[in-house]
Image (cartoon, rainbow over all chains, first blue to last red; front, side, top):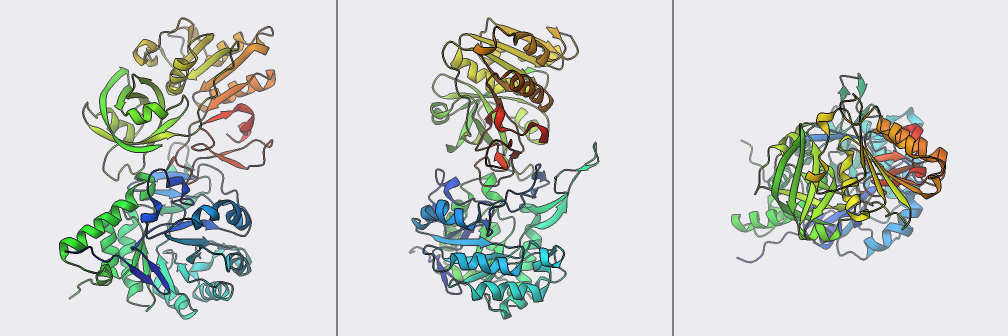
Length: 306
Length: 261
């Protein structure tokens, strides 16, 4: 049998395969370039970018939890200007999709970061992190309010020439409400889930294990939650869904595809096995071959429910 | 830097709760520099999930590298049960190691507990004009230097409880060697628990003696991607935080904000 076709479409964006690396877990790609061929990836979602550099939170920033980890890095990053100067040239030489994850602390800041990336070559899409605090609204997370999520989406769309993926927060009552709001605002796709807010305490000292007190839970511990939310959202919107949350191998990736995702992001697993994303791609290819599937797109939403 | 399934050649207890593991990898041996570390995945399961960072404790021949570790949690407990012939996935060597002392300068190595590990590797490279001061909580924790492949003539021991060597802290022994006549000719290399490092930092900074410190931090990736292992930088530089995995684990004593630790 001939090689299966692993290409997928995320709205206007075509990926050579459905496996992306998740923002914040893969740096700017170069950190892994000695260990894997980045060109084999479906794409790289780079570390969350803000208008100005951000130093991040005080340590401890990470703590391991059962089958997962909590992080409170604090969105540390080098800022738009340094990104364009220092990181982008290397990314532009890659033969894979480069998706820039952006965030802001006000709706205008989202617009400004998007505007700064407008017309820049070698950037395939923008992923918008709406799981951060809105300083104009007393620090309430943008992504917990459907209207504000829509406003952020519109602002980014006004300021960009690239496809826009909105990354959804799972820390909401009904994620489909937010998904529908950003779809209506014009988002080309949604990715989900971001980390689940959590906390761990050192019982000897009675002090939180993270200096930030709370952090974002990731890793295989959150996967069933993510699969369910992807399934719910895929049934609520018409735009493509990218599944994220605790993928450790190709079987996990298949769960997301079957639940309705058109592509997936591998995150925390990159820390555990820096070659995992390549192994997921190989696993998906073999699965398609073994099952006689000619196009991997056929798997998306193929879940059987009585 | 590589990722490799390396075979365990030995994994032996050399003191209560302290193990020396030999892993086979010609590629890591050829690249490894004293002070660098590796990230080890203790098994295929997802609990514990993350790799564990370990200083390289030395190399033997052209294809064996050593890891010295203390059983402190779930990951190291699993490692301590691993047997010869099993394979462990290793990423490394990682990070910036020690800068070797200039010829003619006397080196003093100051270790606390399991912090001897990177200094043993460094001692293999420095060889002469070297005093090794090793501190432990108690005599039964002492790492036998000949077992880790080191035959030193000049070694002093301190134990907190006085059961061996100098009764008291290793930093007291260090202070006794920092005489005025010696100050211009010394270089200090240190690794160990934080209170000890802070004391070494204070002693060397106030006397203006060059000092390199190997720091420990919780890490997720070891590659500079997660930025989890942040340590606050001193006001001298233009950075707020360094990342222990990439900017370190070995730092010049002046670059760290010791107050924050």
